[in-house]
Structures are given as structure tokens and as C-alpha cells.
Length: 572
Image 1 (cartoon, helix red, strand yellow):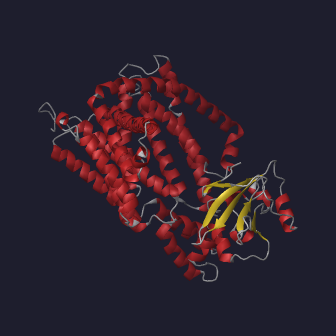
Image 2 (cartoon, rainbow, N blue to C red):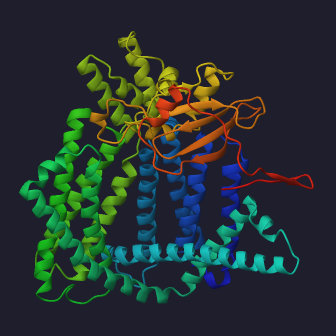
């Protein structure tokens, strides 16, 4: 076994190296995403696994475990990019990929820390799954202290740089804040925080116990709130719940997971014979059945959306999470339904089995052909072919959020319906962002004033599609989307505001402020300033005034100053 007391310097040194590597990969390598993302995943996993498995066995076995985990994580990301790609993919798919990797890597590392050390007896090693629970909490607390170390380090550096500036030593903060230096120092601070926690790991036990005591207080409050939710659902709220048009199942699943997570924190605190006392445990065992009910409710809500609109990555994640939550919480409720089985140690054993299962599920969710994007494409294709009528929104969704499989499916649909399916470039250019926000107004639906302008239509469209792509999501009048009738409240005014002979663009929306943009020589639109109205805006008043030509430029009362060749600009 490696003597970590003789190798403490490896932690800050490796942290600095990993920080510098992240900066280089992200900023200077010039690598393609197909190489960059797997490599960054490999480095991050190698850093995490290396720090937490060091010293469990001998240096060779620990290094091998870290390298295998990092290689598997990097390979999984590479396969995802090869099959799906990272461009034009729904954000939730990328977030889900990273979260799943964090789950299975974290559980495997915890298992190695628990079961990896050499046994002190000749008996076969006992795989006590209950030990996984406190080990997971130790890892999470260690990471939290690592983040705390980063905050303390940069706070100290900032204060010292300000103090040194007072005595004439300038530009220290600018140098330290330079990207490669900042990344290196951040990695060094994080790894040093982990090292300090490792050297005093016996102090983490009281921290775990404090967390467990807090969760023991919060658990009844969460259970009471979920009970109220279930009662209201039983007396009519269920119908309102199913009629919601957003991803309401995530909220319900969050309720089930919050209850289970509070219990997960409660059982790791100590080895007392009961959690809430002799009589309190009877009520506690009854509350465990609420989480499976919430999981069933979430599955029902997801099924309604899938039946109407087919599978999407978000709904697939919802199904997987809800099914796993249903099985895990039902398992937990059954395990706790009994006097002996509801002890903290017995519940920790059940949680240990659940953690191992979660790691296995998290690993297989993004294997080729069963990943959420590929399954969503197959579902959407079946819907479109069955209806024999491609819906424009479905086509937009496929090219915007379903990556390479979506593009291949669109090519196939174009062969089946040549007159109804536009090419990929046209769909992306004209309808960018519409699948993410139902009230986004298309570029060609926003009026431009005045009619004759020196700017080309391409220059105007580029501003609306890029710099104003999010501002266009707030262009429809207030009220329910179904009742708006597509009433646009936005307009673009092109006017020369600085008397340089070139027109600037002012974008008006439904709020009492307007952003001004200027076209640079390289063809890029640059935000300049924001106009603000001194009162609330009247719906439709701006459009009516612009249509009537009722606008003019007003010279400000005070002008900017130039002193010694330097510009002093006014700010209101």
C-alpha cells in the first residue's frame, strides 16, 4: 500500500496539472469535439478516481482502477459522439450523459474504497453493501470541502492583490486571473482541499452525523408535504395534474427522490436501534409507500405525453427515472416493513443494493442504439409514417435536438415525402429555436422599420437569428398561448443614432426597454446600449407609432467628454 504521508505532494501537483490540462484542452488545443469531449471526460474521471482510490491497495492496482474507469468513461462519451454527436442535440441528453457517468463512476470508486483494502483474515472477503452508504457520503463531503477550498483560496488571493496594489504592486490580479494560471491554481486549491480532508478524515464522521440529524428533522416535513399533495390529487387535483402541458413528471419524481434522499442521509448518521423512536418508526414505515405512489403518478403523466407526441429524450429520461424510482422505493418500503428491518443498518444495506443497481442502470443507459436520442428518433419516425403527414414541428425537433440520427431520419423522410419535407439547412435557418419555445416569433414575422433601408435582408436576418434569438421568445402578447392568435409585439427599427451615416438597429419588445445594436466592419452585430422607457409600455403602442412613422432621434441634454484624447462616456 502506498504511504500517502510520503506522497502528499502528489495531490496539489496533480491538481495543478489537471487544471492546466483542462485549460489547454478547452482553449488552446484546437481539437475537434469528437476528440475534445472524450479527452476531457477521461481527464476529469482520472483526476476523481485517482484522488479517491489512492492508497486503497498498492499503487499499481489503484492506478489500474483509475485508468480503467477513466478509459471506460472516455470511451462512452466517444461512442455517444460517434453515434449521436454533440451538435444539434437536446441539452438534457448531454446533461443526462454526464450525470449518469458521475453516478456509476462514483459508486464504483466507493465500492473499491470499501472492498478494495486487503482483508486482515483468511476468511473470504465480506461484501457488506451497507458500507457503501457512509462511503458515498464521505466522498460527497470531501468534494464539498474541495469546492470550499477553491472559494477560500480565491478570496484570499483577491484580498492580497488589492492590498499589494495599495503599496504600488499592480497587475497581480490580472496575471493570476489569466486563464492558464487561474486554471492551474484552481486545480491546485481543489486537490489541496481533498488532501487536507484525507489527512483528517476522522473529523468527517461528526460532519456526517450532523447531516444525518438535519435530515432526520427534514424527513417528516417533506413527508407531510407529499401527503398533502396526494390528498389534493385524490380529491380532484389529479385531473388538473394530467392536463398540465409541461414536464410536470419531473416535479413529481423530484418529490419522491427528495423523500428517499432525506432517508438516505438519515440512515448514514449512526447505529441507533430506531430512526424516529419506537412509535415514530411506525409512522415512518407508512410514509415509505408515498414515494412509489408518486412514481406511479409520474409514469401516468409521462404516458399521456408519449401517447400524444411520442418519445423524446426528456420523456425517456423521465420513464427510466420513474421506473427505477418505483422499483427502488418499493424495495425500500418492503425492506423497512418490519421492526427489525427498519433499523438504520438494515436500511443502509438496502440502500447499498439500490446504489449498485443505479450504477448498472446509469452505465447502460447511453450504450449505442438504446441511448435516449436513438430511441426518440425511432419513435418519432413511427409516428410520422403512421400519420402519413409530416408535422413541421416534428421535423424541426428532429433537426434541432436529435443529432445525427435526426438528420438521417430527415433524409429518409425527404425521400418518402419529397414535397412536404424541407432540407435541413432551411429548417434550421428559418425556425431556429422554435421547438424550444412555443411563443418564439419567426424572423420573417417581425416587422422592420422603415421600409427602405441601406442594410441587406441577410444582415437583418443574421441579427434576428443570432443576437436576438432569445429576445424573440418574448414577442407574443401576455396570456395563454392558445388565445394569443400569434399577435406579435416586437419590431426592429433601423435608424442612424450617432450621425455616422450608418444605421443602427433598435429592437422593441413587450417590455419597457429596447436593445441597440451596431453592425461592425467584420459583419458582426455588437450590442451598444439599452434604451429604457420611464413608464410601463402600452401593448401595441410601439408598433402603431412605428407604422405611422411617429419616431425621431433626440439629442441628449449632456454629451460625452474627451479629455487628453480619452473618451469619458455618460451612463444613465
